[in-house]
Length: 501
Image (cartoon, rainbow, N blue to C red; front, side):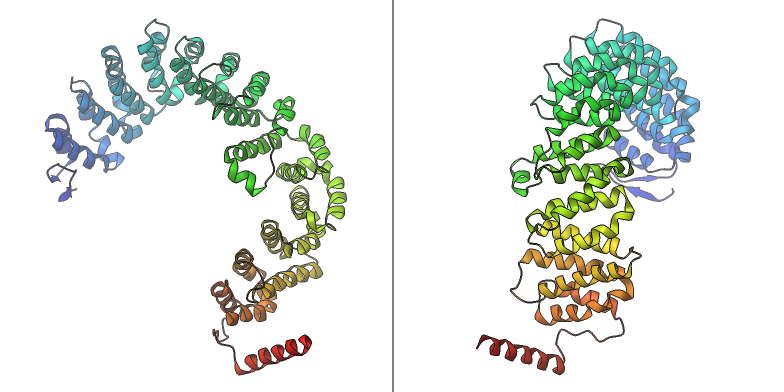
C-alpha cells in the first residue's frame, strides 16, 4: 500500500504506509484526516482489515461516536475476519443503546450481521427486552437494529410480533418490516399482520402486505383480509396486497374473482392514461398464474371474451404445462379466430399460450402467426415475427420452416418499398433483420429483399446492409445497385406505366 494517494473533498492528501497508521488517524485525527483515512481503509481487502480488528474494536469502546461509526462500518466490511472481536462489538452496541445513540446502534448491529450469524445473541436478547418496555423511542430503535441484524434477529420474533399491536403506527410498520426479512419463520404473526391490512395508515398496511408475501403459502389465513385490502385506493396497498396473494399461491384461490376484476385491456391508450392500473393488472396476472390448476377452469371460461380472452390466454401460457387441460379449447379458439383479421391480438395470444403450455403445438401456431405478421396490428406483428423466428428455426417440419422464412421475407419486401408502409412497419423490419441470421444458411433467400431495402434507402436500410453482410460475407455489399439491377428497376417502372394505361 506504500505510496497510495487519495483525497476526500476538502481533505488533505494522505499517503497510506500501513493500515495501522490509518486506523490511528481514524481514532485521533482531525475530521478531514478521519474521512480520508476511512476512505483508504474502506478500499482495503478483508484480510488487511482483519489485521486491524482489535484496534478497530478498541475505537468502539471510546466515547467518540463518529469514530465508532467509522470503525463499525469497517468491521462490517471485514466480515468473518472480525469474529474474534464480536463480543466487544456487542458490548459497544448495548452501551450505545443505553446512551440513545441511534446511528451507532444501527451501524454496530450491521457490523455484527456482516461478521456473520451466531455473533449477536446477547444483543438480540437486550433488544428483545427493550421491546417489552414502555418507551416507544427505544422500542423503535430496537426494531431498527433488529431489522439489520440478519438471521440472528429471528430469535426475537416472539417479542417483535406483539409490536404489531402497538399504538404507534411507525412501530407497527417497522415491526412488519423486520418480520418480512424472516419469511416463513414469521408465520405465527400472520393474524396480526392480517389485522393491520385494515390500518388507517397506508404505510402500515403496505408493510404488513409485504411481510405476508414473505411468509408465502403459510400466510393463507390472511387471504380474506388481503382481498379486502386489494380494494383500498391508497397507492401501494392494492399493489402489495395482490403481490402477497400471488406469493401465497394455490392457497389464495378464493381471491380469483377479486384478481380477475383487476385485469384490464392491453390497449395502449388505456396504458398511457392509467399506468398504475396497468401495473396492478400485470401483478394480478402473475398472482392468478401462481394459483396453478385452481385457476385453469375460470380462465378457460374467459377465453371467448374479446377483451379479456387475450389476457386469459397469456396467463394460461405463464402457467405452462399446469394448464394442459386448456389445450383443446385453445386449439378450437385458434382455428376460429385465425380467420378473422380483426382479432390478431386474440390470435397471437392463444397461439403463444399453446406453445408455452405444450411445445409440440408450435407447428399448429406457425401458420397462424404467418397471417398475423402482415396484419395492421403492428404490436401483434412484432410478436409474430419473434415467434416465427424462435419456433420456425426449431421446427422439424421443413415446410413450416420454409413458410416462416418466406413470410418474413415478404414482410421485408413490403417494407423495402418506399412510402408503402409506416415508420413503425420499418421498426418491425428492423427487428426481423436483427434476428434473421438465426436461421443460418436457410435465410439466404432473404438477400434479394435486403438488397432492395438498401438500394431504395428504406428506413431499415442500415440494419438490412449489416444482415446482408452476415448472410453473404464474401459478397460485395454496396448501397448502389448494379447496372443489371437498375435496368430491372426501369423495366418494372415501364411495366407499371403500361398497366396504368
